Image (cartoon, rainbow, N blue to C red; front, side, top):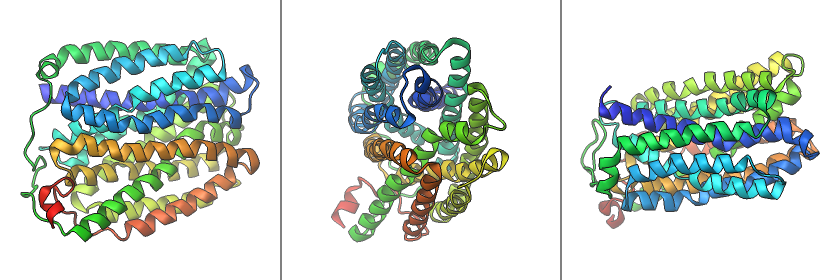
Length: 409
């Protein structure tokens, strides 16, 4: 294995762990703390909100530090820091303590997306941006699925605290290995500015009219916010949805975790397909297809149980997972290399602040009307995404975001 491929593997493992850690509490709350702490799911969801707010807010300083100090150094901090924070979360004795611990975990979790994705795109010269982001996205989605699987298993076998402890030790060990492997790059500090055309077939920077750039940027960040609401709502709530809807086929936390993992794992394959299509068809067509898939399957979900609910859940997760790499692809193609981590930081501030708002929404809607109403709301949201994406140009301008030429146009 070449050094570049080994580094890509580390980045993929980081994406896996990032999503795993941020969703451990979702399964713990749904399957353990409602019994152990005598609280409703609606009440517990609010205590996860500070962690996801930190997940968003600290993306911006993480990207800024990475562009000015060391992207590799920030990745080492991510692995070790999130592992320590997860272990500390296991010692929480009250809802307030677990909210504080999840906030700290969110601070370290915020590092991965602006930093890791910037390095994934930077190293995608041979394979193409879409394919590299798609592969990396699959690893992240497997982390989403494994959170329910691993947490459910550990709840049944060793208690909910073990679900935070063991992944924490694994992440610390990986962080030490990563720091050793990348020590020359970490010592070098600030990365060298790469050429403005890091992707195969990318032309030299060109001037983009200001009005076109503003419209395109507005669409990217609007769809980032709205699609994040769909993705975060479904990934956080799915273990609870399955606990309620799949009683005829899943009677234990482990089985609920397994079924959630199967859905997440199969749906994550959509990102490989989307990655390939992005490099051939472009983001507009692919994004519209993912949005339509969600509109249909969210509308079908109300009232379903057991196998029918499982099949439809797989359908809307295919759309939800499939749309995630598209905005990352557009930013990766349009942002100048030396600014890419900072711009990804802005993207994920928006994305995870939306999640911070989504969690109270999930608890509020579930507590008053149940998940059927949530699914109908998400179907409407997906329709809004479709309308916004239809305004995208068929071809993206290259290296537009952060380019001096664009600013002067």
